Image 1 (tube, helix red, strand yellow):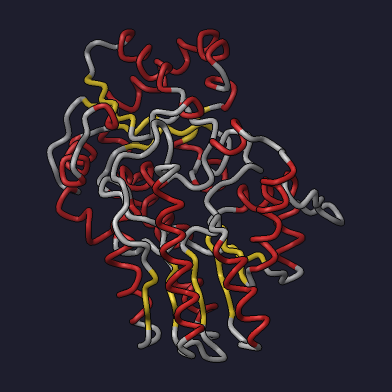
Image 2: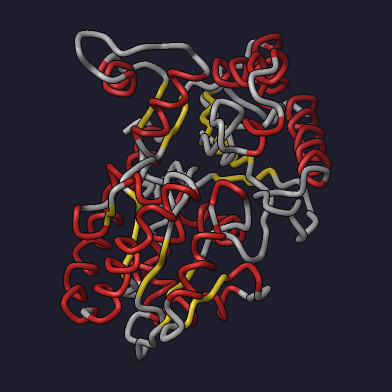
Length: 362
């Protein structure tokens, strides 16, 4: 069996660059024959506020499609081969399924879902919404995959309710129902076990009175709340990372020196930056909503209504400030708790072992 990784384009400042290097190596620990289908170079400047460059991503995917077609034309695809899409929102999966079905080749396809129009806070959700073309396209991609991978139950529930129009049964949530039925939806951790070693050099850095906003500068991340807190608490240094055009090493240094990583996000299906902060000892201050609810313990969550909107924040500003000051002034009291939290996050949400088992049929 050959495992083909149809990858997502690598942006140097994001985890996609690390996946480019580490994911093939991690899979090779389970199966020898791993081939990466890359789309070549990609623009490093993403569309403002977005995860990708909206033009460049289609050039990248078109290059991948050409390679997939040539593999079939040259007879290199065999029964039993596995194709792993590290971003499930890739229309080439439709053409891959087309070729395999018409040529009678028995392949298996898995795709990792990050976001789509079914998320009202995502770019597709905000700008395109429930337009028929995008909803049907996402459903088609979903049904092309034998394994649809999700990192959190929150994401499965949103996907099932908004795209599939699927409700839970017998008092169970949609995610619980689908997972119990052993459908083509799979709840697995993301393949990021390399992060522990990568961030180890930053773990014991001297902490400063720094609070970090590590998210994209997009409306659903509510950076204006963070900026207002900076004005209210001038005794601390507030850093909006994306404003500084940091290298990965510079970014990790800032995380290593920070006491708190702050979120007021209205969209999050996993939350990698908060996990990175926890790995180097920064306290994750997360709202009790989205994926954060199932991922973080009570020690690191604050009531959702405090930052559900700007108006909600203004009403609850004093509570947010009090919570933040407690983290900053009592940092040492949370040190061991953060270490325990990061270990639990690694095991459940940031390890690809379950995914590798599915791919290699173990």
